Amino acid sequence: MDRRVRKTREALYSAFVSLIAEKGYDRLSIQDILDAADVGRTTFYAHFRTKEDLLRFGFERLRIELSDVLDVGQEERWAFLEPLLHHARAHAGLFRALSEGGGAELAEGQFVQIIEDLVATAIGDGEKRSLQVAMMVGALLAGIRTWIASGGTRGGEGVIVGSMRAMATALATTQARA
Image (cartoon, rainbow, N blue to C red; front, side):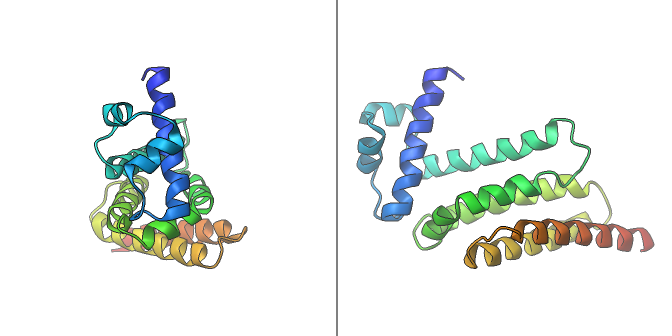
């Protein structure tokens, strides 16, 4: 991607994120984003059609970032957990703001899909794969929500990562016995 295109998209996304935390998703207009990013309407529409597209862009960035962790030769299938939790803590205000506004359904769907894909890859093939993915994703989402709601304190990441690894081991052991 061209450096100027990347820079413009990043400026728009950065303005978008800061404004969601400040104003909330529902009250945020494209004009607000244009003003904060200091770009024109034509420039915005050359990159995105709606603020929902801008939100999807942010989740696509997260997907790529977490997939890259797995592509750098990591043999550890759960290597995405720590960067995912770091992202969740760094964007806790954004998560809270989105959960209270009109972008909640889209944001939740995008976040869950990313986690489902990563967990499915980590689990690999198997007879009970869909059940295992559902269990792991549910546990991970519950852990992230509880942790963020309690302030995203340091140390919580270790509890979540350790719990997810233990659950994955238990599920693999159970499948091997079945």
